[in-house]
Length: 172
Picture (cartoon, rainbow, N blue to C red):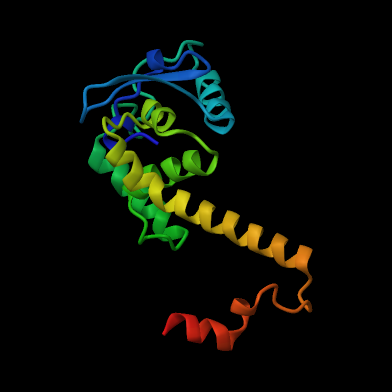
């Protein structure tokens, strides 16, 4: 969920087995971020492959073991997106998606900011707003469907104003 420019700065000393520490390049914010179970498993697996037993230096590396540049990482990600026919989704789309997932999980703006590092509620609303709108629309639809099921789909309208003729008269 962090900016791709921050990914290349992760070092093994930033990973404690459960969380990653990040100093965001754009904002300067220092964050402690719990890893997803998938990321944690991947990092622990990668850590175990080091011959010396101690992982040091950058987590993302070039084939020769050096620190990966943003440009090189972006090229690798573009090749992967092309392979999956997802080229239209840029690296920033991953951040956007992560914030939407937090919103779908019911996280508050403060919780999302603590994970994304955004400074303002406005930025969180920009990213999470679409997810929340989708959730509210689904909830509204479910409530509508529940009400229809309670009333019965074959039942007559409850009031005279529910009839199409009366609705037309009330609107004009």
